Length: 384
Image (cartoon, rainbow, N blue to C red):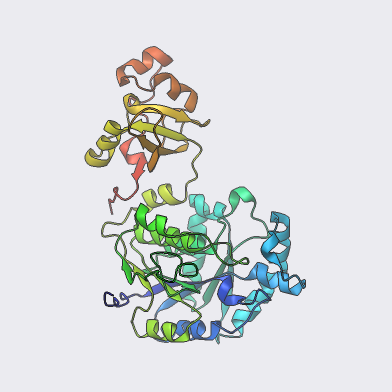
């Protein structure tokens, strides 16, 4: 097995702690696994570093308070909202017992992350809390989040927070030792990966869903979170939070889990927001020639390269860009862009040359479908 990498130097970290650690027996908050995590945070702060904690567990705490110990049947959004409202103060009180500094609760929704004005407000609030020496404790605001406005899991929420806070390290504390070549709960021959230089489709193919009923994520959401963070230049580590010695090793600069290395050429703030936070309303399928022009030559997307239009969307909406090798063949997503044409107009001009747009539509607001400045490509577009 390759030697374990060292933990990269850092000054500001987001530490995510999941329900598997906070409520290990599905029966409310417990300190069983939290003392070493708290010790890591306290020692890091003593060294002059800044830490933001993203904590799951509100719904689990609410379930225990209501004497419900079987979340496996699934919860409706109103049930989650009510249980989160019950559990949030219990969760905060639980964490406060472990720290001798002021703790501040920050509740976010997906809407706070996808709207730039609200994103900036949240960013400023967290910055002010850190300036005051406060420990921000972040969770999704399940009491008001609707299905459309849910991040859905705290792994991805932690990645968004790490971007929002301009952190240089994201620590995801889980109940496994790191990323494996297969699910170690099901395959004893699975091997741990000490580091991942680039998150590819092959990495996603290795991971599956959560094995715990109380959890909302799984290894897939942890890889998604790592991709969001590393795309913005944030090193991400996955460690086993049930093993205190692993947290102690992390505090010494060692790397006992899996290190996802930050991208060498991170996405700009705007393009990262476009790719990871801006919701899509449809899909544009392009041919292989157009895909090559976008990926290899930094071109804008022209109507001549469009072979299919999916969903209703309007001018100015964000759409997924996918490529197909031939008609009716499976498509694969390559990025996202802001379209200059709505779906109805685009269907009329797809496959046509730009100079024909005005003759077909009666006007031509742009000679391109997606301008290169409004286009972000996965694993390829890195402009600092």
